[in-house]
Length: 195
Image (cartoon, rainbow, N blue to C red):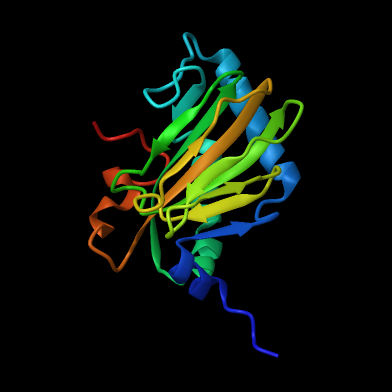
């Protein structure tokens, strides 16, 4: 019987991996609860240019902590030495959608983490594979999609649930040409974005 390929080999061949339960579901839900509280206590909380119908925040401390906490596993899964750049979080509301896009130079290696949701069903994220086919990925709280954000186009169709909390962990290859983007060019993890 042939040995199953390592995750790093699979990542090199496909540019993405799905990791079920990479975060304990209770931890994922705890981070979602913190984000929901932050949304409630933030005056004029609003979305961003990608998803106007949703609360979005750059580098909230819970997901910044996950950025470093998940780095060893991200390195093991991808076979790369990684520098964290930044985290981002969003609470999608009914009707929110994410247009097909690729990410900027701070998002060479990315992870989208399902934190929690309320709705009649789970909500897929789509990823374009190397053959140009759309791959539908369903994530439960604690599940993670790891992908090459600058290479693999990804998107979501209009959300039909009530709310869906997601965080995004971004890294660059420490031995690659984008290593200068370490910490998103900030002083370190947890600092505000550089303008």
